[in-house]
Length: 267
Image (tube, rainbow, N blue to C red):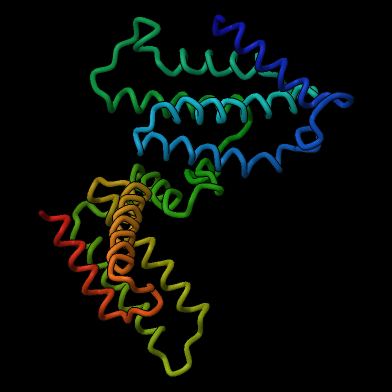
């Protein structure tokens, strides 16, 4: 079956699922808002498949993610907002327009010039739609995960000169924020809201350090999570091999197993 026929079949399946008479009760009652959590979940499942290099599963997860687009398009069609063909038309036009160095004779001397043109085209698009930005931060999605949003905010500000040129002040700021957290946490009467506020500042400063070291905070923390999980599972296995239960072991014993796991990884 050709790609176009497969898409037509998928659109037909989606329309049937939403049909008032013969459709699925669950699919019929969904709205744009109720589908959003599923879209986010499917996106992360795609990421997991890629990170695990599970290519068979990736094929399935990409299908699930495509279905989210089809679902939104069907609901939009029902409300006479737009349909899937409109989505494709806008996407195709935008990709061609944003890549003049590929689809026309325009030439750029560097990757930076390509990126500058991309941003200029995005600005033109917003102007044409009437969505003129009052701030350079207007286009940073509020629904992004907090680490990613902090990174994007900082990159956007840095692009307009609001950033340190060297790593020293960035590191100093992290140390300053650590001290401010401790100042609040060690008060005789701890005000939890103030502690949380200072912890937020510390996390924001740490994201800035990660960015200055040319890393992505989501990726870095994701790898740290995976490393901790891998090592802790190994600790659990050692506990089980010794016929003990995790809850019966004190921290000192578990910490010694943790050190053994780290040693095993270095071999």
